[in-house]
Image (cartoon, rainbow, N blue to C red; front, side, top):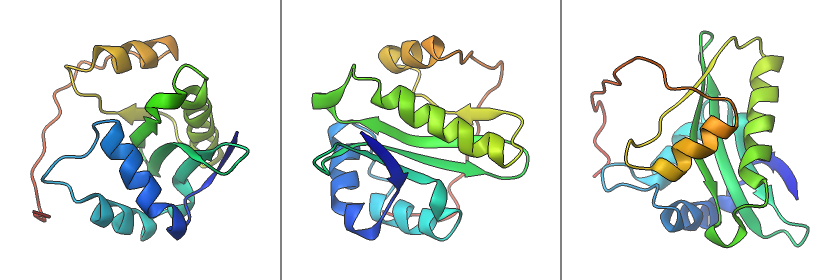
Amino acid sequence: MKIRPFQPADEAGVIALWQACGLTRPWNDPRRDIQRKLGEQPELFLVATGSDGVLLGSAMVGFDGHRGWVYYLAVSPDHRRMAIGRALMQEAERLLIERGCPKINLLVRSSNAEVVAFYRKLGYTQDDVISLGRRLIHDA
């Protein structure tokens, strides 16, 4: 397995991966999310590929100078339980530490117990916060 920055040729495969993992939502256009990420720290948009070049996973990482964030961590359903998600998170953490990032945050849907358990195994704990949001640009 190899972890590398996203390349434009990865777009269709990444979107299919996100759809297979249930990460897309009608109000978030994945193509627009990718284009937005390519405009900000594109080197922190990671993909994992097999030795045959097949896309296995993705992670969209960012650092705002205060906190690091991980979005769209996805591993192909056919390639789970092979430490791909762990490897993507380790690379995300390495890249953030390299930038002087003191803390990493991520959002998981409260109904996704399997993913919460995955992150707990990696040493992540639930923060005592409420996530608030407001849509500024409507994709759909």
